[in-house]
Image (cartoon, rainbow over all chains, first blue to last red):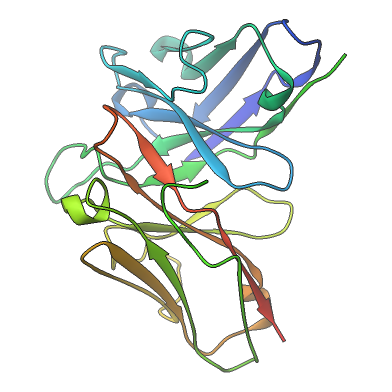
Length: 127
Length: 112
């Protein structure tokens, strides 16, 4: 079945960088739209970034724009999140998630759901 | 402050029915964008529970149902069970910022 596995989290100092990876299996990753979502300790969910199947359209939340970069390697079935200039408020569990494909409409819709989630990887930004 | 507003907590006894509300604005639910619901059990990743306002993914019990009207959406859980104790999040797309997906702040369901 469809599965996503994040890796790359850890402890990093303020101002530092980290690259998260998300390995996909059990579905055609190269056809899938993907997102990154995070959850600060004890807090709710925050959408961060979106990328279409070929990487031609990318969006970021204002909170990470200019600091984070989403990318993908379809040959490796992998999604990435490069995080630079990290701040204490970036401390969170980071999830990758798949955008749901609407088989009735035969397309992706911007207002659709995230139907497959990884288990998350923890990022701690602290000196 | 979340774009979508949910009550912080709800509770109910086993077997009872509970509802969780999610209030949005004209730039998300009111703009005819769909509501989705996720269940997050303690220590686990969120799981899609309801999509497209009313649809359940395969494997989700029919005790869970969703609805949407105007700028609000609701999740109803009937026949409450102990394993339903979790945090529930609503989610939608918001057109106020190009390419922006928003969540509610989450509602903690306690089964008494």
